[in-house]
Amino acid sequence: MKIEAIDLFYISLPKITRTADGTQDSLVVRVRTDNGLEGWGECDASPLVSMAAYVMPMSHSNIININEALLGETIDSPEDVIRLRNKAGEYGLDIQQLDHAVAGADIAMWDVLGKHLGESVWKLIGHEASYKKLPYASVLFGDNPAETRTIAESIVNRDFRAAKFGWGPMGRGSLADDIALVQAARDGLGPDAKLMVDAGVIWGDNVEIAYERAVAFAELGVTWLEEPLRTEEVGAYKALSDNVRANGVKIGIAGGEGADYFRAADDMMTNAGLDFVQIDVGRIGGITEAKRVADRAHELGIQYVNHTFKSHLSVAASIHVFAGYEEFDLIEYPAGDSPLILGLTAPSGIFRDSDGFVQASDAHGLGVQVNPGAISEYQRMVKIEIDGEVLFESAQP
Ligand SMILES: [Mg+2]
Figure 1 (cartoon, helix red, strand yellow):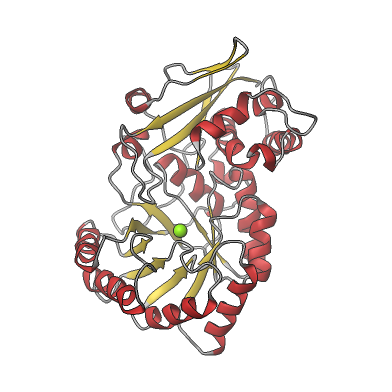
Figure 2: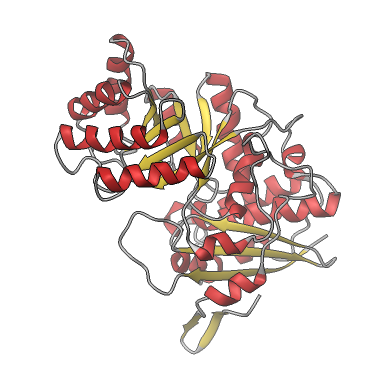
């Protein structure tokens, strides 16, 4: 089959706030083929900037838009998807934000190929089994300990056995303030639930402050401390994780969601001393690139975890990536209430079974359906025009 069209849908809530909440807007990508099939993907990147990467005029031989690389191409096998992902990477570089933008098309190509061949994506990318994963509810800290505790209790009431709290006031006050937030999360969750803490790169390159928190949070049974430092502070990460290990502090160090392409993730896995590497399939360039990271993490004995703060379309794309690695047993599971994100794949999704686990399905493609009604409801209508020539104009799904 041939790629006949690539459709871009910028969706957003009517009001965007300055919280660290990635479920306020999204870019959804649809790939249509000449045999009447369609596949869907989602980017975790600035929607409008990413749209431009699909249609902008050529700047020179290394900045050519994604449509130019993919439209009219043949896609009949996993090798074709990998070839086309590489071709898009040759047409454009990081200087056009290629990796984030092409992620949506890459995910959509795997989805449509699965539908074409009658296979699930996890099989197409080389896994032999689809293992169950424990979903952790991923939420932001409340504005104070009391709010945080209420959020934690609501997570328990929704039958989650694991949760991650992040951003908000974490790291903006004293050590005691930070401990009070995590204590509140622990109190609300109870002693048995897994608890993770996401510091949202708040301590920059300050190993000492991060280490103090790691020690304190370990006492509260925190599984990992995520992004205590900026992604590029690889040496500081290494100093922190060496300290944690040398002193027998029982907490993992997690990071990697800021990895924009495979080499950045590989650098962190090799040099940052991570226990958990967290990869966003919609940011690092799609399923093709994320799978390379999962394979490498498996080799190195580092636990791969998805980073996902978008819709179940992204949850589905993420779980296929590491479905076949039994030891990668946790999955980030967005647990907020954004109607845009909740509605995008309704009524399908990667839902919890009676034991509370989730699994990449055997359905053809990604195994979730996109709800065009949700796109229509939240779509921002975009027109990109240069010198009177219209390069792109939004259409209804
Ligand atoms: Mg994070």
